[in-house]
Length: 227
Image 1 (cartoon, rainbow, N blue to C red):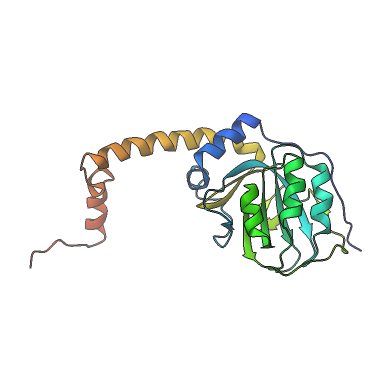
Image 2: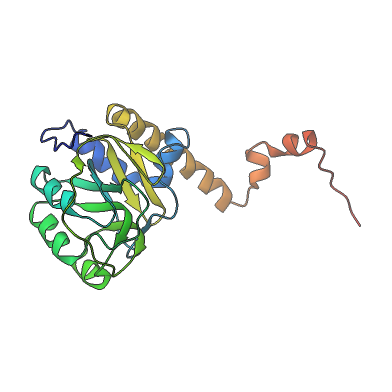
């Protein structure tokens, strides 16, 4: 029989590093860590202005059963993000306004769930950030064991307890806890580089020139012709 556990204590990244990554955003972070870490693009925020950055508390649930989400809230710390996945595909509405109210009371910053959510109007009014695969009024039960703070696969990405989760309108990205500080530095370097490129583009310079793409076009056999 598979063992089901709730791991109470996990390691987390430095709070300032998490804040910096949150300010950089999912697209910059993914590029900064070699175009890795993005969750599948079907994970969408339930309202456009949703943003979150925090440490992952991972939850493995049975489809259509949110028992372990309730169990996970108890072991969360302020600033955490719940990352919920199911043992097989599900779009049931496993999370709603009442659970969000409980999360906010315990300082939980948001939810990433590879399943469905409900009560979207109320969640938006609470300004509780959620990224989900589906929106569904289909209810769930509280009957089947799962696990909290174990390694999971959520929307195609491996996520471990304490990894950094960043979500915004572009999507959700995971950063390994051990490399979070390094990724934050590379992200800042990328932002500074992009600012210089932005200034050159605003001045009218062509990307084909300052990115050195003319040589690439020639190498690929692209010819300029006048008709």
